[in-house]
Length: 147
Image (cartoon, rainbow, N blue to C red; front, side):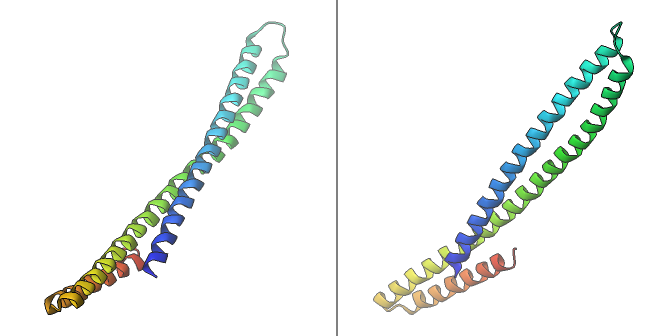
């Protein structure tokens, strides 16, 4: 059970980190789109200043680009916020994985101590294996409750 939970939380952390990378790429795409709209807005603003152009047409385009940029900016910021949340969740899952791995290590040490205690017939080694196993169970409790 401890080994399974350790693997499951490791996979969850990796999946969350992967999802964060995807969202980060989507945010970068939105910011690139925002930049292209800014360039088009700048060209429209430049066209307003040129003699012999339809200034009303270009003023309308400038306003349209401003509105589009605001919407794109909100979307990009939403993606960035999602990235932060996913990375935070990934770090939490990885921390939990470390707890499960520590618990598994303690249980494996307890098994080794129990085997040595059986071979040497030393009671103190038997009690040491109980103590280490109990420590492993306590650590797995920490992992279970996300501490």
